[in-house]
Length: 182
Image (cartoon, rainbow, N blue to C red):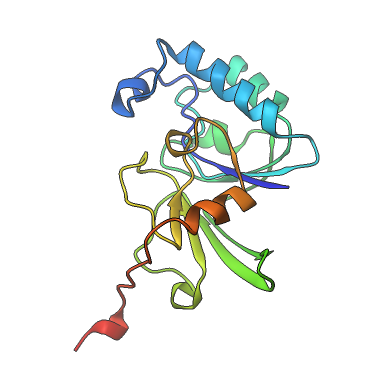
């Protein structure tokens, strides 16, 4: 199974009021995020973390990441400094990725992954999807674009089928492209 998440911000106490997270402390937040991850993900699952993993880097964070199940891929966010990017827990580290996935209605669909939301992305005019983080639920999702940060997914990674189900409930994506210029 493929999972997506973003903006865990482990050990980042200031993210709690910034994102209106329902936690009394960074430790409580970390405990809930880790528990939710472990309840959903097995070692056989693939997880794309779309950035902003942690605020601090220390032995606790290293052990936490190493102990999280799944084959973990990091899509780098603006708070992912060298220690986070260099952690042994990651199967890959990149700034951007594209996945071609089988979809229930048949065929394949392109998913564009980046920490940041795009106005236009590869094949957006042909139904591709942009999954991102960074905005902590402050952007309106569309049928082709969604924030997979923990603030939008009940503080847990979300599966590809769950992403597709949610996308089907959102309004159509408004394409803003050079093709629209007079």
